[in-house]
Image 1 (cartoon, helix red, strand yellow):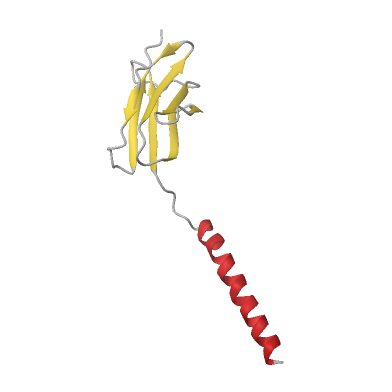
Image 2 (cartoon, rainbow, N blue to C red; image 1 turned 180 degrees about the vertical axis):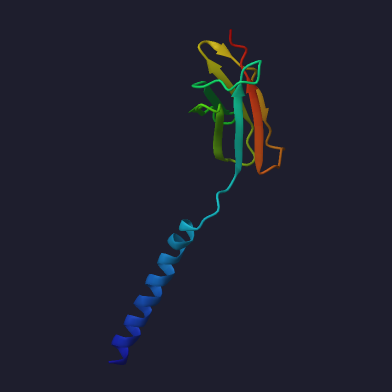
Length: 118
């Protein structure tokens, strides 16, 4: 009888220990940096439907974001220790390429991208 209770107790402890890492993930605070910004024209008006390109300088992986009516974009959870390049494009017109340095230790980086649309 004691062996059965001991086995049940050990099984219960094992189940709690195994489940605890998954419980932590639900409340996990995002890691890495957040890149935010806006895509504006030369008159500081938002460029709706512009596409923002974010390139990881280490892996050359490219992520894109289509801005909405306010011209805003965001890329969460950028890997620390990695440089990134970001630019916007709208109807064949491209903004300057801007860098997000791995040495910039701010948790949130904000970059305004300007497109000189006609």
